[in-house]
Length: 379
Image (cartoon, rainbow, N blue to C red; front, top):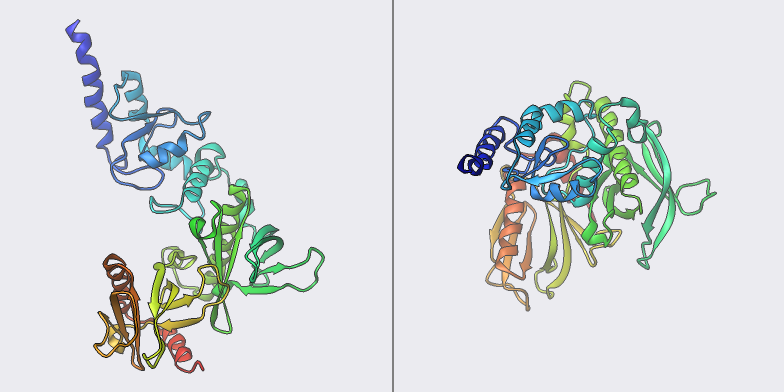
């Protein structure tokens, strides 16, 4: 009787041994440390958030908490596979440009990554990667209208040969409404901001100013395929532009999430007019401000260089600042002028200063000097 009672503990003990093996210390799908769930059918250890996504494919994956009582046969299965062996099997042919989500990414990206690996086996067979690696893609996406905020079905065409993503206002239109060069294209998932789980924000430069487009598709796989198609196009463009560069150097340049976004108040260059509430987006070295988070164009942009080039960020505002504003000020000093902002809470002020500091601490790349020069000569 007693020996039977000890069995689960023995199983638990052996499960801890399997968990401590290299590769099993982080979630197999998003890299979150200390995974406390496992898929008994796939033999991988995952975090709680990814275990919930595994539950959406019950015909492929059956999950169990590592704290539960484990049968010997279940422990054997986990010991036979594990995260390292699963990676070798399910991720053997992941293209360099394909976005591998982390635990900080939106649910859509994580779920489609899990489905691509275990349900569709996309990365075991090269031919399954046609939808996003072909260099050409066309289809319909719901695009937010610039003026009234409604979404309309629009035809989009991505062509590596033409080096552009285009969209057309009418189905039979010969000329595109907009042509976005792959060279300056960026895409980032923004489900909360757009109000749709598949919401994607596409940005590009037009006359060296940032232009935003907000799109979604009702099919999650379709939207993630568009995202990876954009990354593939950017990857192939950069391989030509930087022939000596390695994949490791190019991949971080394919798409980027914004460093920080949120509301702050700002005042004009004379610092005498009142403070106005604006939505701010920190995109690499461009700090943009909008009247509304879903505006197509920024009201203004501020270039933020490096400390070697006399850029500084300070908490607080100059004592002479006039007008009512939120209590937690930030002053950005550039070679030409001071920019004054105010945050509603101390936590927001702290986060914004940290984001600005990260950019200022980073030395400027040669091409960023050209961007800075353009900002200085802007009317």
